[in-house]
Length: 98
Image (cartoon, rainbow, N blue to C red):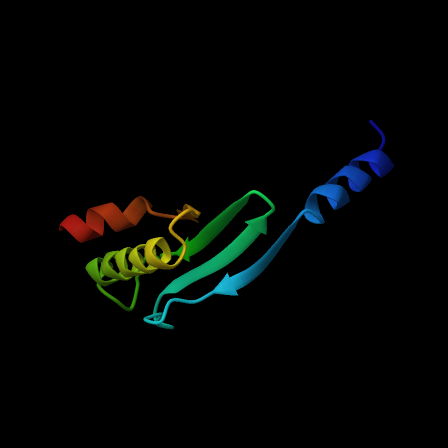
């Protein structure tokens, strides 16, 4: 497959959805969590991108509570949406249980 054909196919897929940022009413700038609402003709997705630094300025349990509030708000406002949350959770579980 040539490069031109690949670029055309990617462009076609991009034109079949729209996206915008979504913010929860309780969003805090303390947490590095960005939500994007994606509309695909058949489905609605909310994609969260999380950055949890090695030495955060907050308690890990506060971040977990914030994520929980966001997901609850999403399920109320967009009950049929698929929720995807991505990020680095490696240290989060250990810190929250300590």
